[in-house]
Image (cartoon, rainbow, N blue to C red):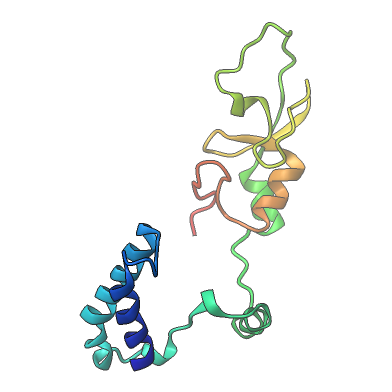
Length: 155
């Protein structure tokens, strides 16, 4: 810890003297220094300091290993829950003069493809519509609307 603190002090002293030319770099170093000084003395009271992971500085292999240790938690819905909470509707056939109230209503927010006339869509209770295939695939992974993040089912 002393090495990094000493390095921070050297960097703070070098700010504005050609060592660090960019002011945003100096500001970042000074903020790190202040944080280290202000919170450094509190680390002896942090019972969980050894449990903290610095994932920003982990290698790809270390992150993969961590993922294997933690495991995968599926927050998606089962097929029967998807069917129960998804209303199937046909996209209306409009002439070319029809104007959508928003550009978002014109296409599926998941795949970004425009809806075709009389195409089957899946509509959630929040009112957002998607291609049936797209929203089923989404809901098998997540329990929320892709646009407004409203929960599809109350858990």
